[in-house]
Image (cartoon, rainbow, N blue to C red; front, side, top):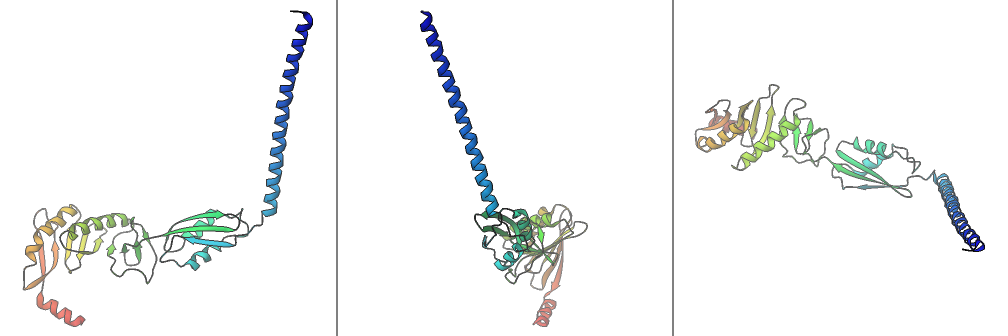
Length: 261
C-alpha cells in the first residue's frame, strides 16, 4: 500500500476513535449534570414541603366495638405536624393500645392523609370473669354493651388460656354432636378439668384422658337421665372405668326454682 494512503487510513481511524471518545465523555457529562439537577430539584421540593401537615385521617376496617372518634383521638396524640417526619410505628402503637384493637396498619397518602386499618379482637369467651378470649385463645381486657350475652365462661391459671380454649372447642364439638351444650369450663391449679353443661350437669374429668372421659359420659348419659325421681347434679369420671353420679332430688330442684321465681 502506498505510504500516503496508509497514513490517511491511520488518520481516519484516529479521528473515528476520538469522536467516539468525545461522544462517550459528553454523554456521561450530560447524565451527571441531569442527575445533579434532579437531585437539587428534589431537595428543594422537600425543603419547600417539609412542613406539610396531616389534615385528613381515614379509618378503615369497620370496627364494631371501637368508636372512630376514639381511634382519631389516639392518633392525634402523635406529632402530625409533618407528613414526611410522621412516625408510622408510633401511630400504630397508640391505636393498638385501645382495648378492642388487635392489629393496626398505617399508611401515608400524599399529600396530607394517613389511612389507618383496624382489626378488632373477636371475643369468643370470658376468662376468669374479668377478661375475654379471642379466637386465638389470647386474653385481653375490654368491655362493651354490644358483647353477646351467651359467651361461655372459662377459668384457669394465668398462662393456660390457649390450652383451656382449645379444650373447650374440642369438648363442645363432641357434646354438640350429641345434642348437649357446654356452658363453662374450669382448669384448676393442679390442672384438673371440670365442665358445666347448659342443663346444670357438672362433669369432673380429672387430669388425664379428658376426651375419653367425655366420650364415656356421652355413651351412658341417655340411660342416666331417664330417672324421674331425681336430676343429675354431678358426674365424676376420674376412674379408669366407670363413673360416679350424684343426683339432686326433683323436689329440691323445684323448691329452688320457686325461690328464684
